[in-house]
Structures are given as C-alpha cells and as structure tokens.
Length: 173
Image (cartoon, rainbow, N blue to C red; front, side, top):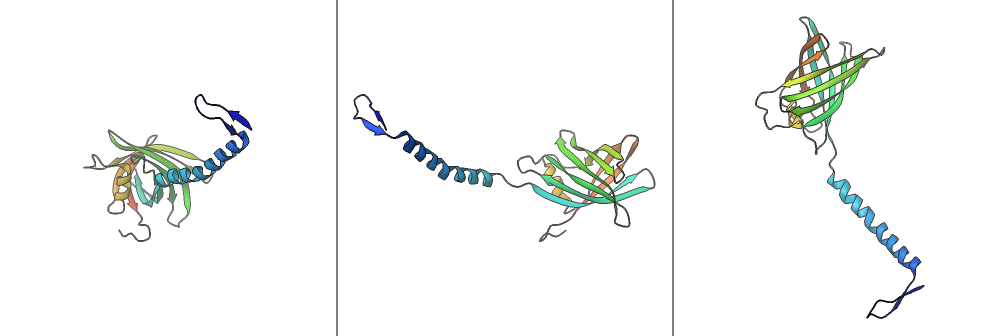
C-alpha cells in the first residue's frame, strides 16, 4: 500500500496492484463494446456477379463470367475476378480486374492466365452516356437492369465487351 497526500486534502492509502486490476477490468469490459461499434460501422463490401461477352476483330467472339466487390466507403472503385469459358463450359482463362471512376469515365486494367501459364493483360473503358455523378457501384448495379457496354485493349488486340448482371436470390432482372 502506498499513502498518498494531496495538499489541503485528507490522505488516503492506495494499493497499486488493486488499482491496476480495476483498470484492466474496466478495459476488458469496454474494449469489446468499442470493437463491436467499430465493426458495425464498417459495412461489408457489395458483391455483384454476372456474365460477359466480347469481340476481338471481325470474327472473334468470347464469353465468360465476372465477379465484383465494391466497398461502401469507396463506391468509385472496384475489383474482381473474371473467367473466359468455352462453349463446352470449360474455363480457358482466369484473371482479375480493377477499376476506378476518373474524370474521363470508368477505366480499368485486367490480367489473366491460361491453364498452361500464359499470361495476358490489358485495359478497358466503359461507354456509359448520362453517367455523370453516378458511382462505379451504380454502374455495376445497372447490369441487373440493362447491359453495360465498353471497349478493351491488349497490345495490338482490341475489341468491344458487354456486361450482364446476375440477380442475387430475391432479385429479378
């Protein structure tokens, strides 16, 4: 025990270990509540998915699937995955993509690998008229109502693409 004297106040005795134990007990009670409040304040990312088709040159047509995750606190950027699937339903390429809404519109980059390890990468842009003020998240959500169009480029190759959203359970298109 330690005796503490404050000027003009009566003296009292303090047990440092007991005081420290009370502090730890208080923190142990308050910390979980604080963490719960912080966790509830952070919304989970919105997950969207769908199918896509693309052209390359005059005769090349491709199709596949896409997924996207958009953070509620960053509605103008997103990332996701995509796959190129042949007519037999086999995956030929798998890759990732990322995008941001810029002052020039929606733009992004993508990369992918074949099953044998050959890699590809490129860029893409979305062609959306009347989209001023709309977020990237809204663009992806529009795929549930209408197709979204754009263009892609990889080295000397280029073409057009079309996204179509897949409704989650309880949603309709």
